[in-house]
Length: 124
Image (tube, rainbow, N blue to C red):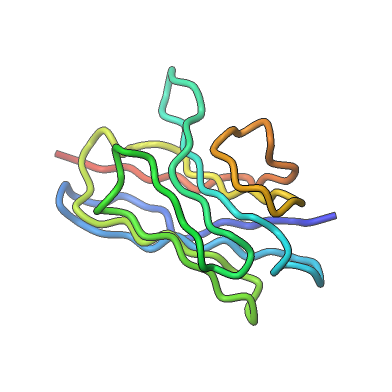
């Protein structure tokens, strides 16, 4: 069982930056693929980025590539999402998720554990 707790969301002006964190419980954190997803009001949850257990492989959705950076610190059981050049369409609840497999995937249904989410609101 893995518990995930996100933090770092908030209200920011367009063009600003935020750093989201996701702290995980459990002793085998480095074996989990970790992902970030987001859900805007009235829209389906969408993939943002994933990172492999070692941190050596990352992948981003096209809409965030070049602006968002996913990373992890296995010693701290934590992953991060650095988000830069924010725009109002980035407004959403951001969720981190864990997958108990080494297979990398963008599908939300493939992730086993989810955090409660952190709100990011970008004002124009």
